[in-house]
Every structure is written in structure tokens, then in C-alpha cells.
Length: 68
Image (tube, rainbow, N blue to C red; front, side, top):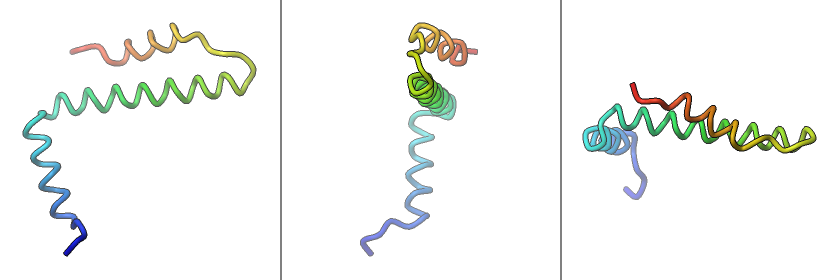
């Protein structure tokens, strides 16, 4: 009784998609993915020897999130 079943999660997902719309959720997912990718690139660049330019990371992230 205290646990949340799969049906509860499906209802929550349906309500969230109705409130925010699929386009906003898709955009938010893309932004989150770009942020994670930029973080991984920065960590890998720093462990490889030198810091990566943050301007290039921001420009790359903005290129992938343009409104269509």
C-alpha cells in the first residue's frame, strides 16, 4: 500500500504531458542532454590535460537547441 505502482507513474506522466505539452518536454530533454554532454566534455578535457573553452561548449549547446 505504501509503494507506488506502475499505474501511478503512468498517470503522473500523462498529467505532466498534458500540463506542459510534449514540445516543451522535448525541448527540456534536449537542453538537459546538451548540459550533460557539455559537462562530460569538460571533465574529459580537464583529465586529458587542459581546460576546454567554455565559450565553445555554450555555442555547441545553443546550436542544438534552436527553435524550429
